[in-house]
Length: 285
Image (cartoon, rainbow, N blue to C red; front, side):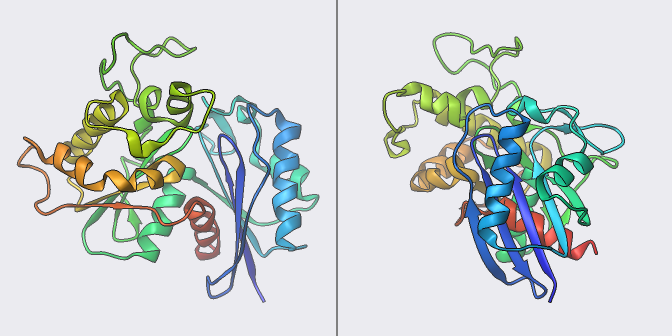
């Protein structure tokens, strides 16, 4: 029986999913949480997930991870949120983690999450899937087919300049100003209440995070004209309680080029990216 594993290397933990040959879910697991791990820490987290899934020799691996791939698509060239990935060849990463060679496919975390959602909840038209966790990624799909710019993906939405939505500009360690991630990414939200767990239910239309997100959603409408926008990831899922607020704010004066009667939806799982990576690997065989 074929077994396919999806490994989602995230900014704060690794999630993994195991599917059988019919793409039915066998199991899902999460590693212990980490913060700015080195390569050995990431290897330990991957090994923990594979060990808990109990699969000795998978048929294929789907690997999704954040950052910009090099031209050869053999390694991450730049990962802002996980610098340990920079320059680390995928072959070496998986060989060191698994102790064996396994056929694998690499997909961005945003594309993997978008693919799983589009396959799980099929709909006609175009889907813009926005994954919000440590970072913010965008995937655009027509049905279950990715929209591309040439042979590249759609881009890194989280690094888009959304302007100033607070009293002061937000400038990250690299000197980049007022990115979407600096407002709605998990580190930015946690910084609001570093002593406790932020309750996203308390966010209002006047909060910088909501204003920055609405700005970005309106840009996505203007460029990609999606029939539905889906918010995924830990933060994206948690914003479900603000569905009506966000939809109304985005629609207020929205360009007429946008799709009429567009829908705003939310993820139902923390494992969309891991599941999508496993499905991608299985379908690519």
